[in-house]
Amino acid sequence: MLQSKQGDSWKNLYSFDLNHVFDIDIKLGNHFTSTSPDSFFVNARMAALPIKDGMLTLHNYKLKKVINGREKIIQLQDDSSYLNILEKEFGIQIDVDYKDLKLLE
Image 1: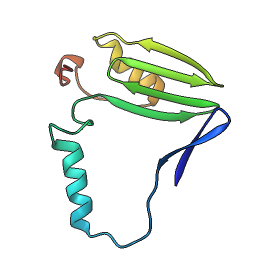
Image 2: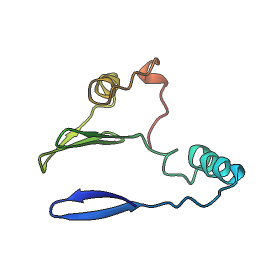
Image 3: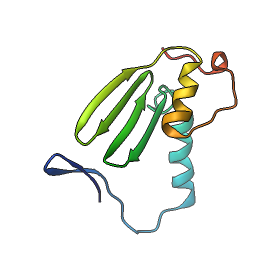
Image 4: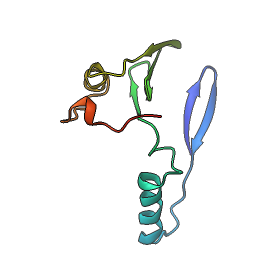
């Protein structure tokens, strides 16, 4: 069970066991999450990074920093500065012009 400490309590995030899984089941799950129009991961820009004393999360244009229990939300611009934030905050470098990224609805 993977848990995250939130305040004084632990929240269950997900669990797994070591039972056998067929390769096709893994491939199908990966295919669905990366291609299906019904998948959350196809319709949003997301990143998460645990950092010292906190967590960074990005959902579309909202960057949330939680450090030492204090939350700061930054609304990102719909322009090339978005790519700068990805690199600065998450270490993600994308070799593409911002205008060529998939539009968010």
